[in-house]
Length: 402
Image: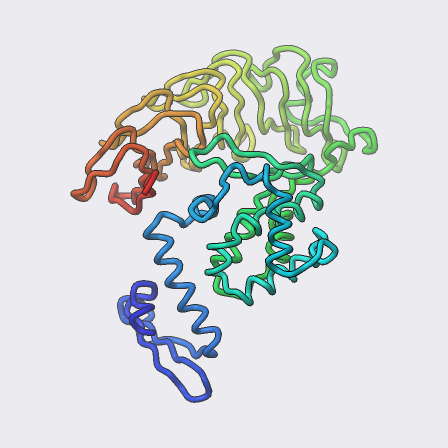
């Protein structure tokens, strides 16, 4: 037991006690030297198996839900075309009827019990796609959604979309329960996924006709009443989202289209009608901006670029988001062409996975290699995603292929 946990818990010691129990004591390297706890044997064995799985997944780059599923999946993005077959095989394997697996939350308890009985190791080897398909159909019914395949990732994956929900990920649900060390509970995990992906219900959203209108305040009150149309109001009746009928300056900022205001009438977000500077940075026309805490605070949260342009000396791709730290250094961006950043050859592209991330001190935090590159005395191939610490040291890598 001690040897099995050595990598995971930094030199622990494990002692077997009377009463089918184990005492785990942390080593000095962990900073918790001499401290520990007593566990029931069943819980402790489960924890040991989980630790071994975490180590094994890390060695093979399977830390994330989609990469973990893709490793074990037989169908990958073809899964959504084989839903009925997968569910029929799951029913047969479990010796259950369609009346038992009726796509309700309650039916997930039966599936969870079966996975517990055969073990998560066997389930992920033999039933990963089947579980994703069944959990997905339960979620699909719950959100009145439909299946899609993500095209924005090097590894396409299935997900669900619905009018009131962002990406709903049955893969997340199954991965979480197959990778955890607690008892499998697909029912709770599925409910949590629905809550996670539910689009926020903004105060007064979609209720402009049922809320008594209140007069605008702040900078919005300086605009002529016929210059905009209110589409959404806050619960107190103040305008929240408006459509500008023509190009107009809002507190000196050239705006067009949709804009948002807080209850005090201060500008939250908008779209530029022409080129404009925020501080020392220039942004092209049709760039959509959003503040951290409103125009009066002045700090940007993110900008969706209206065209290809340079940000802090780097060529950035139009139509992508540039995010900022609270100190206003760049947090994330997508390159328009491959560039060396902090001595690292960084790949360009619109995909979210190709975004460069930066620490608040300005150092590169993560990127995908545009070509083979040597780090810590090893050459990593093009397409490897690397993560760096705040001092430029290599933190981890995710290889594109085996």
